[in-house]
Image (cartoon, rainbow, N blue to C red):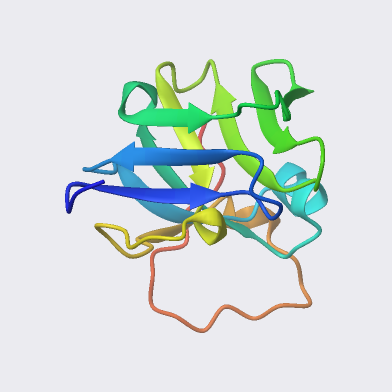
Length: 135
């Protein structure tokens, strides 16, 4: 690894990944599917070209769940960590959970996505743009 890439892993370490910079974006997603999949008010994702990511899964623990018609979510079947998201809406792009990076990133969060479906029990107090669900 060099200063042009970063790493991350699931909770148990069975799945690890390396991502080459640059990332495309970093954003907090407030959609109801992310809320339910992660049990949280929102999830912070890092968007990157899939070709920039190398996934190491020697024990075959990475499992993909089709969470909607165009999208699937990758998680570790051993520890349950949610790691990845991909969708035909954004072909060739992989979204990686920010919290699972163990190394530094090249940018900070830039926006709140799907903010029109945010929960009413968490108050966002930053100045980042709050974007509705894209059409």
